[in-house]
Length: 193
Image (cartoon, rainbow, N blue to C red; front, side, top):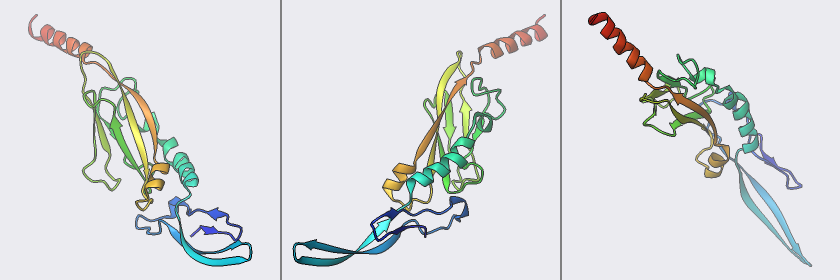
C-alpha cells in the first residue's frame, strides 16, 4: 500500500493508481501501529495504538475529474439529438465512463415529468441509464445531473462524502406542437383534398 506514517508524524494516505485496481480489490484502508512516548517533567509513558489510514481523497478526486468527469460531455450523452438544447429522443446515459469501473455514475433529472431518467436493471456498469423526454405543448428546461461515486471507499462515509462529485447539464425538451400540427395538416391534405 502507498500509505504510511513517518517518524516525524507526516501521514501519507492510501493511494493506488485507480486504473490498476480490479473490481475485486479489497484493500480499502490500511493500518499501522504507531508508538507514542508521552513526557511531562520526569514522567514518561509509552503507548502503542493502531491507526487506520483511508484513501487520499484529493488524489482520488483529481483522477476522477481528469479521467471520468471531464470525459462526460454533451456529445457523449446527447444520443441522436442535435444538442442538449433540442432534445426530442431518448438518450442513453453511461453508468461508467471510459471503462473506469472504480467510478459509478448515477443520473437524475430535476423534473421527471419532463425528462424521465430510468436506472439500468443491471448495476455492474455495463448497462446505461435512459433519459426519456416527455414532450409537451411547450419547450421545457430541465437539469440533468451526473453524480460520480468512488466505488472503492469500503463503506467509509467520510471517503464517500469527500469523493462524491457532480456535473450538471442543462437540457431543453422540445415541444411536440409544431410536429403534431405539421403531421395533422399533412394527414388532412393527403386524405381530405
